[in-house]
Image (cartoon, rainbow, N blue to C red):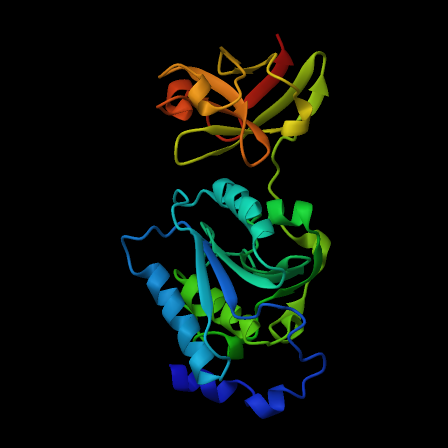
Length: 292
């Protein structure tokens, strides 16, 4: 299979003559991050890294560096993947290749894409997974990954495109292959975005929604830190009124508390427990922040 891929790719010498061929897409071209819902109990993450290392070795790209953002996204939870990727990308060097696979539509109609933005290149399914990143760092160009010479074989698995398309493309991008060589250009306005209910001002406060539940059961809302001042505010959610504190430790053990998290959003937590379990809140449920 690897030999088949090698035969289809342009030689390193001929590829260097392609228009626009340079490493301008990736100022730190060897760094690839991974964000998935695969977990670590199975071999899936290791296989993707093996594929990328093989591509780099076969085509003389040099060694790659991998950073695991997280593989603990709940299965098929695109909203959580969107949130965590959006939080992580700003902390990596400009030009990093960000490979993300939370893909309940694998094998279906959704597109496989790569997107160039100010912080680097995003590779994965077109299912809104990248929308939080793109809200902060707008897309400059995007392609559909439909050039089979850059896949792991001409007929990728319908259930593991993270291995057969996304990982191989990420390795080629890290090796200096330009974005436009990987597929046909797509209109930026056609990229899929997640339709979260953004926080809006209401009398005495803000109305928003839950956008993510993290590993600790903290419910992160769509109300930004700049919407609240001091500690004289409360969050109304699922029939509860939750008072603001400055940090997790300021609440009594087992107490529902509201605070501004390190990510810059208002969240609801339980000191020593799970707010999501206590409140039975899901992504998209309404929250209201008001001054008491």
